[in-house]
Image (cartoon, rainbow, N blue to C red; front, side):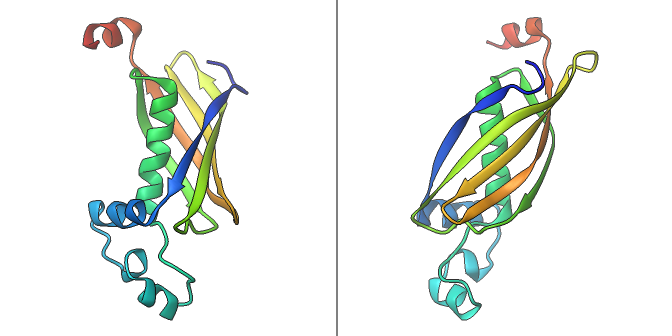
Length: 137
């Protein structure tokens, strides 16, 4: 892994089921994540994804791309354009820094949908020594 390397993108279909299931799984019962009428009353055209679901998808993206030896150490994200049902979010990542002595790397993340950037941020990962990863396999 080297600074500047790009991770393969991941397309995620933003469905009503994903939005509602993510909110329920994270115990976020705000009505704007499951009730269309309540979301509209509050100025949104539809229900929208919560930050905890986005956070989980970002973590999944990084660990899926880097493999079983990667361990999340810090996830720092900021939301922008909402993820509404019927859209697709494309996550992309670029290695912004590698610290070989610490066995860590930082990945810059951008997740965009049809109306703009939904999420931006960084994920710091640590890598298990090769021997440790092979013993678990």
